[in-house]
Each structure stands twice: as structure tokens, then as C-alpha cells.
Image (cartoon, rainbow, N blue to C red):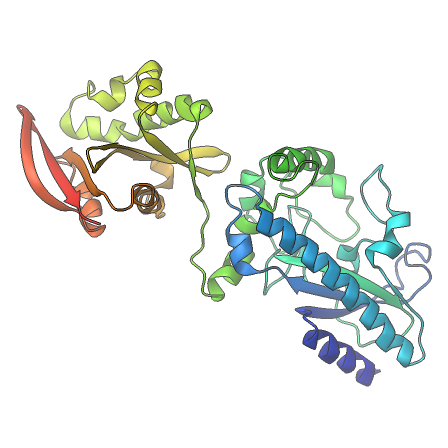
Length: 388
């Protein structure tokens, strides 16, 4: 039925579908597939800019996109069934209205998940995050399916994960709901994904924005395949994202500060420098008049910077990046973010005269030296400035 297969692909693409695949379902139990032999899998890609903006948590825009695509997928499934019916074959669109009565709340799953049809249609594999991962869009897709007896031109099923050793979603999952095990066809979801822990965390992460909703999406954003999709769309990839630190972060930031400044202490052979001797009480007091930013990756703070405004000048200090996360653009991202917080002001900062990497880094961001001050024998501060 090449004509039907081609018509489905053509007409649905015109309506907004991103991927179409055809699956042979006959090796699944008949009751699981409602005795239909074939399946049509439909995927629609999420808007790149919206996905790129959820690094600090789900947004209203993400939720609205989520709902929009759900409505679109129902429309696409109904249209696909209509086309199939026009060729004289029965079809059962797995819309929310049709699937809802069969949803099992004990295991939070349907009898025949859309993901099963998608993998059997060759659209992708199941990632360690329990989401469908596609080559073109990563896991930034929403999917639906249609069951039919029409003998479509089926694709080779995907039966094994292609995630390999990548653990980005595992390391960054706020709920720690992922085991890291690789999926294979027929594998129970519980072997690699704790859906209840995930669900609880999504409720927590969306509560202030949309009480009772269950969306997160961080595992989508951190997937390397999704990253390729976002970059290919012309977007500057924004993970890890910069956020405002709060009082619950101060102890972790202080510990990171002492770790990050250890290399500076070695350069100057002085382990009594202020960043190493600052106390938590000192930091809390400093925070009362400062803006402190943070970057989280792998569920921990890996970078921070702070600044204070005085008489029209923004004084930037304590730019820190975890030693294991340096040379990844985190420092630059923090500096750009803190400058946005004080847009319109003149910026000042300083570093030690032997800290050559720091000097080169700040100069690369447009800062220039304007004075040098000897602090003590063997230590001078070089002051740098930048005008908006």
C-alpha cells in the first residue's frame, strides 16, 4: 500500500507532523494492540527556543507548548484515521479521549504506549530517561499513534538503546529517578526508571508556576541529541543555565569558593587569602547587599559570581567555577549574566598580578586594566574596568 503510506506522510507533514513511521505490531499480544496488525507513529517536535529556556525549571511557555502539541497530535491522529478509512481499512486513533479510559493509574501507563509503536516504527529508541529519543530531534518530541489493519510499508524496529555511555539525563535528573540502565525491547520500565519519584518531583518543580501540573523536561534539554537539534535551529544552547542563588545555596557556594581558590593560594603561596578564610556568616552578611548567581549541573552548583552596586559602579567579585567544569564556558556565561543584572553601569573587578589566566579571560570579555595596587610584598591587585 505504497500510495496510502505516501499519502499519510504527505498530508500529515502539511499539517505539522515532524516524523511519521509505520510499525508491524503482530508479534505483540493481540489484546495489547486491540487485534490490529499495524501502527502509525506520529511525532511533532517541540519549539527549540522553548525547550532551550527550561534549564532553571519548567516555564509557562513550556506548559503551553506541551498542551498545544497534545491538541495537535489528537488532530493528526484523527486525520490519519480518516485517511486510512478512506482506503477501506479500519483505524483506531490513540487520542487522549480514546486512550484515557484504559489508562492504568496504578502503573501510570496505557495498554499500548505510543513509545512502543514509535520504536517498532523505527522512529527512535527509549532513552535512559524513559522518553523516546530520535536522531533528528533528540527527545524534544511529543508523540501519538494510530492502530490499523492497513498493510503499510513498515520500517525496521529499533530494539536497543543508542544512548551508550551517555549519562547526561541520569546525572542531571532532579528526582534521581533514573538508574542508568540501557533500554531494550520488552524491558520493564521499572528496570531503568522510577516513574513515581519522577512524578513527585515534577509536581514539586511546577507548583509555584502551575500547582498540580506534572512537567519538568530537564532530561529533554540535557540530551546530546536534543542539543544537536537546538543548535541546528540556530539557537545558542543554554544549559547549564544561570540562576539567582538563595540562602539555601550559600553553604554550597562557600565550599565551592574554597575549592576554586585553592589554585590561587598555591600561585601566591598564601592560604590565608580572604576567599579561603571567609565564613558562612560573612557570606550571609555579604549577600544582604549583593546579587549572587549560580550555575547547576549534575545536581550541584558548579559555578557562581557575585556583584554589588555602589554609586553607579558594579563591583564584580568571586567568580568561581568547579575545577572539573572549567573550560566549558561557565565563567563566561556567569559574567554575561551578572552584567545583565547591572546593565547601564560601569563594571570593576580585580585579580592578582600572577593570575595570568584570569587576566586573559577578563580581557577577552572586554575588560581593560586601569590601575595596579600593591597589597603586600609579593602580591599586587590589577584592577580592570568595562563600560557599558
